[in-house]
Length: 316
Length: 316
Image (cartoon, rainbow over all chains, first blue to last red; front, side):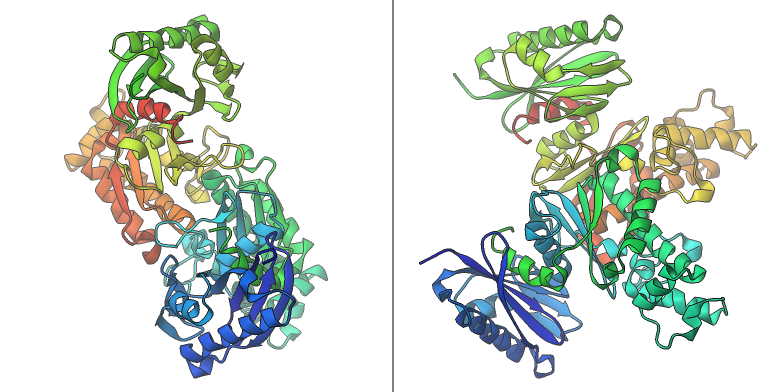
C-alpha cells in the first residue's frame, strides 16, 4: 500500500490550508480554499473534509496511505477529546471537531492550538529539526508559544503550557492591560499589535519620527524606519526585543531549551530584530543556562501550521 | 532473588545519608554517617561505599537485590556522565563520581543535583505521588527547583532546567545582587538567607519590630514574629511569598504544571507562608493556567533526598 503519508489542516478564519507530508515532515502537496466561517461550523467542517479529499486526489497517493489527519485551530480546546470550547475568530463554542471529522473522513484526527502546531512543524522539519527540546515564539497579532520536549508538544495540565505571550514581564509602572485581562503581558509590547501601539503613541506625543508621515502604521513600517536610522522606531524595536530577550532568559532557568525559534509575521523583520533579541537575552540570562543556546528564525513560514498539524499523529 | 530494591545517597557537606527503597518509593531503612569532607573526595567516596554496604547488611535484603544506586549532590555536574564539575560545599572539582562508585560497588550509579533529586522523591512517593507534571521548590539557604515531566526529572539542554531561584523577578529598583552574579533573583528574597537579610535590614533601619530583640535572627524567628502579629515580620513574609507566587504564575503560563510542591527548611513555616503564596499566585496567575492547580507542602521532609536519589535508576 506504499509509504504512509500525513495530512495537516491549518484552519484559519478566512481560508483553510491543507497539506500532505511524508514521514520526515517534507511537505509534498498543499491545497487551499475558503473557510466559509459565515456559514457555521457544519459547513466549515464539510469544507475541511472536501479539501482533504481533493488534496489526496490531486496526487498519486492513495487514500489508504493516509495514516492520520491533524488540525491546528486558534482557540481554547480540550486537546485529548478534540473538542473546541471557544474559538473567537471562528465564532465557535463547543464543537466536537475530532468526532465530526473522524466520521466524515474515516481516519484518526488530532487537533491542537495553532501556536503549538507551528512549533511542532518547526521542530519536525523546520528550524528545530533534530533538536529535542526547544521553545517556539510566534509573533503576530499576539505572541504565541509552543514548548517541544522530547520532540513532542508539551501540553501541561490543562493544555495551557507555552502561553508565552502572557508572561507578565513589563514592570507595573509601564504595564498596560492585555486582551487576557491581566497587565504587563509580553504580548502587549512584543506583538505586531504592541509595536503598532507604541509607534502610534510616539506619533501622538509629537515625537520626532518619520512614522508621523505614515498612514495606518504597520509593524513593518516601524522596522523599516528603524533600519533607516529613525531613533524613535529603533527605541520601539529595542523595547519589543528586550522583553522577548528577558522572557527567553526567564524560560532558560526554568526549561533550559537548546534553541529558541521565532516565527510569525513580525519575525520577517530579520537581523534588526534578531540581533536585538540576542543582545538582551545574553544580557539578562544566567550564563550557564544560556551557554550554547541559539535564537533562530523559523524556516517553514506559512507552512509551519500544516506541517505541524500533519505531525500531530506522529509526534503527540 | 526476591524483589528489587533501590539505594539512594544524600551527600551533604557534613553527613552522608543513605536509604533503601522498594519499587514504590517506600523508604525501608536508612543509615547516616559523617561525610569526611576535610579528607578529600577519595575518602568521601569510600565512605559512601561503606555506608551503602552497611545499609544493606543491616537489613534482610541481599546485595543482589540492589537494582541501582543514585546520589544527590549539590553542585554543577555533567549528569549523563555522572561527573561533578564543581561542588563548592564539598570543595570538589572534576570528580568522576559515577565511575568511581560503580567500580567500588559493582552496581549502576546515577547522580543528579540535590534539588532535582528532592523533587523526584516527592513526585515518586511524597506530595506529588500520582501527579505526572509538577514543579518543586526547595526553600533553604537558596531557592532550588526541580521540574518533573511525565514522572521524570526534566534536565533541559545542559542540566540547567529548574533553576527557579534564579528567575529574575525583583524589579530593578529593589533588586540586590545574587550569589550567581545577577540582580533580582527570586532567591535574594524568598530563601532563608533573603528573609534573614530583610529582617536585619529592618532592624538596622530602626523599624519597630520584636526582631530587634533577637540575637542572630533565623528565618524561623521571622515567621514566629509574623505569627505573633509583628507588622514588620508580616511584611517580610509577604514579600518572600509574593515573589514565590509571582514565580509560580510565570511558570504556569510556560509549563502549566498540575501541582507546586514546596519543601526545604523554610517551608516548615506552615500556613502563614502557604496561605500568602496561594494568595499571590492567584492574584498574578492567568486564570486558565492556574485553574485546578494546587500548592502543597512537601511531605518527605529530610528523606526526599535519599528517596529521590534511589528513584534515579527507575525514573530517569
